[in-house]
Image (tube, rainbow over all chains, first blue to last red; front, side):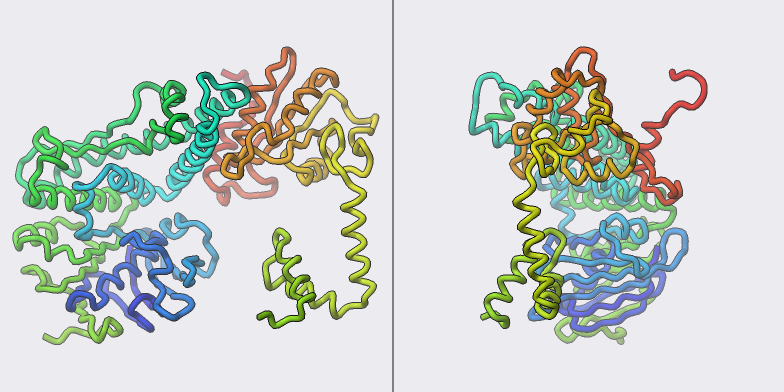
Length: 367
Length: 204
């Protein structure tokens, strides 16, 4: 996969920008806060239709303008050229076209253009709660096969309905459920268990596949021969339908569904101990990179060509040895990296750009 | 401060509240009426009022009707033991257009959607259960929409229509006629495969 040309209009700090990229490595250099990440964010948006910084659409529209326009000439995994265009309005709504055909769903774009993002925020995968790790799993599943987005959406819709119904029941709490409430809840238990079973089996097979890949990536990144394990821990036992039925009392009291894929954990262990609580800062950073690298390799294999790689200020947090190891471990493919400091040793960009002038311009780097 | 006279703005607002009409279309319709003969506006107004005043829900099937019972319910040529359950009156029109269904209807008035505050009690399900026995219904065909809310409603109906001897069926979902397999989305095609039908041999 490749990004040949990018043009931005009123996107964050860029009023007007047009750039062409080589198929190898592009380096974006400049001081902090100048707009390097904005460029990477724009490239990422053209794949997933959301910001990898987790901000809403309107935040990406330049101040005092009505909309941002992003346009990219890309080449998909099969070598076909495609034009991806998207307009984000200042109320956060987006319209996207692939080859001039309106696409309503993010997965239409993902069929054509996939990115892998590495950023210092990845450390949160190790340090913070389970929702980020579930999202990691689901995002990889969707990138591998965009139609998996439907599985996630089906589950979320059914869960929202059941939770809305539980809230309604909470206000009329009774020992046993009368009709028609009992049947209604049984219907949602069935719908949730159908959708949940599919989602969890996808997640579990991904975890089984990716665990050796993460361990390998950890070694490649110089993490040594530590034992890396990832365990998918369900928040229930037995069939999901039964667990939901058993938990009815608790669910009604709390007004939310307390068991299911939305409460599951992806536990990462290092040498037999939970990495979240027991691993050092350095080990956690190495593990977070290993998770991203393993996903990137998995995507490279399953999509038949490496996704476009965005390395957002990754090297500032790594020592030279580990930076080198990361660069050596990446599959051959188009790469964009941003840095406020020096490039890692031995890193020779095909295009060396300097972001300057309040982030509004990009010009070729002259040492 | 509106750029239009108050009455014009009121008209535009009234159109814009209708489903499927945005602010631009509302404005366009309003100006069309103002430009056209007064007769056209009078006809529109009286058509709206007449339709609203003359119609009500059929007391049996809750389809829209001008009489106590709708034309389908009083039609003696209709199979009285076959009942098609739909969400809205417009779905009756859709099924009627097929010319494939010769039974009667029951309009639920929506689908289970707790986010919109619609549970089974808000739908005409009690009325459906009250019909099945006295009308000696042989088969209930559930024709709710193939989305989450419609499917949940179908599941609910299947559970409560637990009447000895009654057949409960659900409309199949699959591919559009005249379409190409390769253009079908995988969800629809998957459903069509799951719901495939036997044309030779015995089912296992």
